[in-house]
Length: 306
Image (cartoon, rainbow, N blue to C red; front, side, top):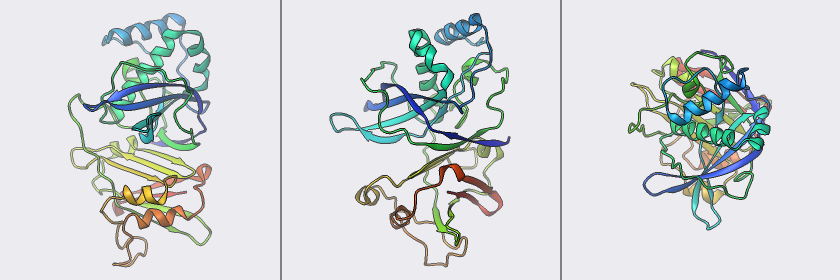
């Protein structure tokens, strides 16, 4: 399955607050909009209403109406009390904004689809006791480039419940099955012409389905990569956040090192975290509009140009 890039500059819509896990960690979900997210397929009012009602009833016969949504990887922030919280952006097509303002039921529909897609893409189980903080978005909505399947705008006949809950990320995991993500080894280099290449080590056994379902989110000072796991390969999550202070980068650094011997790096010259990230932080901002990615599975690499 081919993938295509989407350049997004999300505009805020509204924010809801949920909780995840036994510790009830706060999760802020930003419902936002961008014209580049594919719109839902044309449908009459009866079809839309039926999809909304069936979705609430959790029926198996879902109809053919769906809402594409691009879901970001979770990022850390703090609530008003200073406690750590997660923030996730769910980006819908801009044409849906006006209907959410007119119809409370449609707004609830968007929220439920967003929560379901987050649960499918992550290991989180989110509470349906929703709060509505008096903010349009938690944190800053950065421009980004994401890669999605080329057919995201097409109706696949699988019904609204499945088709509507996401165009980016992994297939839903069965309830109770949680794959612990691993952080891949990575390194970077700067080409003579100023291009920054980030090389991520990936398993050579990575199946085609995992490649097609992977998501890459590039912001001016942040890169978020998610590669879903398979029977032979682990789930890989890489979050390189250059917005953090040096102290935060050092405090959150994993113990594993960057890959050795790739792209001319000599053995013993590899960089340990956090040095890898700290040196990259001193470079220019990522060029979101020019970002690209190339899989070199035979070499065990994903090369990201920013």
